[in-house]
Image 1 (cartoon, one colour):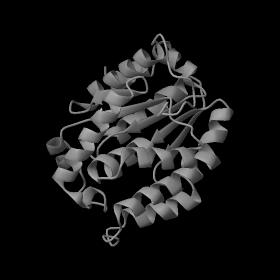
Image 2: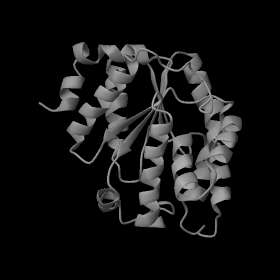
Image 3: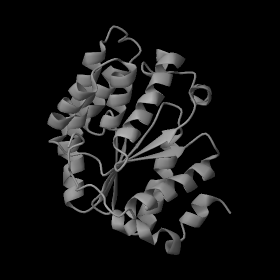
Image 4: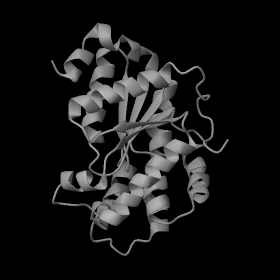
Length: 235
């Protein structure tokens, strides 16, 4: 029996009910397989009986989707890194106020496909922008509210590049060296904020990744001390 089948049994995923009102982010390099795990985890959480709100970045709102089209269009090759960062943050500000904050207030589990962690990795570590500048803009964009937990799906750049579709968007076209820096950026974040990050090896098969994901989230939930909800990353 596969891991998802076991996890779908009510007796196995009842622990997920305590995730209501929490904000979890799934992130990682392009080709890490996070989208598959996002879908599985969302389905499992719903089977536990809680409301799940799914959002993606950039996008997730009518305004955000227009920004997404600009950001990912290969025709916009002249876009500067600072412009990228500000556009991502603009989409994020709309998403947080319009969808994330109300959903958390209503007690739903919010699952986000990427968040500030992506900007730190792509425009920060890989793009050369100062991390503290990005965090400062992130505080404005989110009203200084941050995810309870960011799960990073880690995979070697070589494996990740093989998984990408041949129809690459503008960010995916940046090359192996750029994506290797992205991966190192995620690792640095996990070292800086270990209480808010979990790293899952996604170089293995999907069922093994799911098992690692569930174990990581449960370990975070059972930790003796978790950071208060909404605390700044720079505290």
